[in-house]
Length: 238
Image 1 (tube, rainbow, N blue to C red):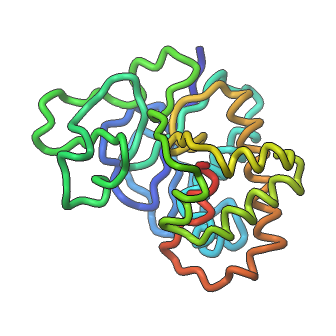
Image 2: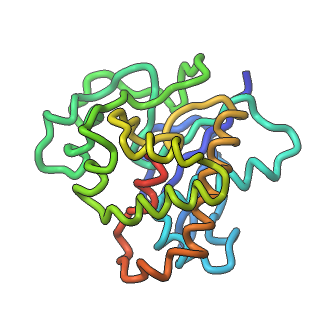
Image 3: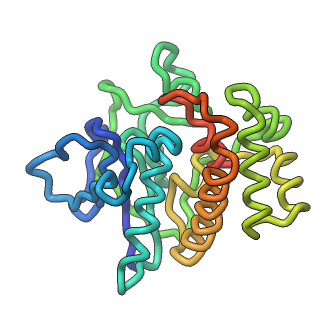
């Protein structure tokens, strides 16, 4: 079964070994790495105002670039795998649980296994051994999605994006309400893992349509956001 793998990076070195057929999505206007066998997609060359788009979408700009790259292909893959330069999903556990680490940012990412210099079992080139249609993060449970989002971000961003999803036909009002009350959360959503192509493409298309509507109709109302805020990207993962 054909699988197309994308690894999104903003310029940092990929922190795990890659297979040669993985495609890097480069989120930087700086020079891409030399000497790699991997195909590199320079996302900044795909858009007229890439710095602004990157500021507003954070790493989700890479998922947008992957979606549009796949749209350009005549032969579609049967599955799509998405990873970032420091996170990936697979069926084999590597490293130690996040709670073993207290002084690095990833230690707050619930459910994550962290690979450190003392990891005993070497990590094979990614992706490796993918033989299932869905490979996603372990679901987490919270009181509700709205509460979890509001702990770190401004709740109105999530509410506006759900509203955009309703306006663009990606959600019904009942589905939007259920989503906001949902207690299960899959870290990374459809931006991290392996998915059947038809499912991923349809879901990402609806999501990006809502995001475009959000930027067109609501973004000026929340224009004070800074470079490092990831509200829209986090809301996309919901």
